[in-house]
Image (tube, rainbow, N blue to C red; front, side):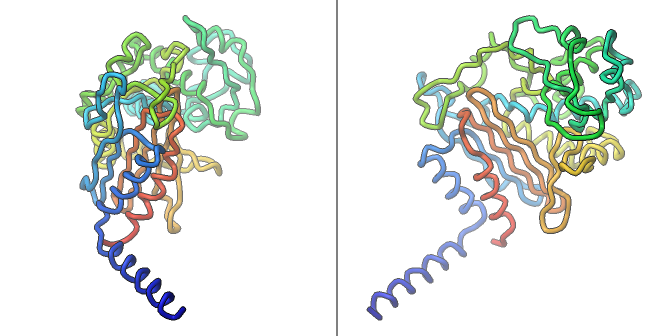
Length: 340
């Protein structure tokens, strides 16, 4: 019995020694590879530590039926990770004096309920408008007409309710004050200045240009987007790559897109629910320096997170809708907290 216990203890010590000797990159790869082998993940992962990319890898197929593998250049629908992009667009318009954070809906829309008309851009950005969901799956959806019939779940500014409709309304406001479409706005205000050459706004008729979405990571059943993607412009219709989103992160971190004031407002915890403008704000180790967002859409999942104090960045994009990216992201964060 003593011999067995001794052998088990020796095995444990050897295993610990081997793990402790691995680099962060090797440990991240082990975690990601295991998720892929367990059919829990397909897609792309990019990790940066201290401002340098330490891990970048693709898993699974972009189109299994046509034997196309995911690669660095694969484009994915990023679903609700589109919201930070819309928030950046709005804040750039504020920086230019075209919009104000305290502008109300009454300034941009007519025939609104008196309480609805008092909703501000700030409240839409921070999910505190109280507006109930109004977007639908109908072709030719008219957000202005739907707004005239919208209702409130609570008094604007008195609570928090995550809202896709709120960000679609922000898109509508941006279009109204500039006279330009959403796709053109994000292209000229964000993608072009940052050099995001593989990003854009998706349309159902052009989905062949991005990865095919699947129900799960086994890739046995394709997922179907059965509603017009333009209905969620502002909230979830952007496509991108891990490389492009890393460029966006660097532009934000290096103050290349927003004024210092607007950047501070974007990453500030405006409400107890830990939301800024387009980002969830998180605390780690007593410091509120983590901002993140995740997204899910038919056939796709996404997770983006940055820890500012450590200059760490994680982006995970998947073309499997049921992929639990939170576990992978959390595992990577734990690895980044350790020393090589």
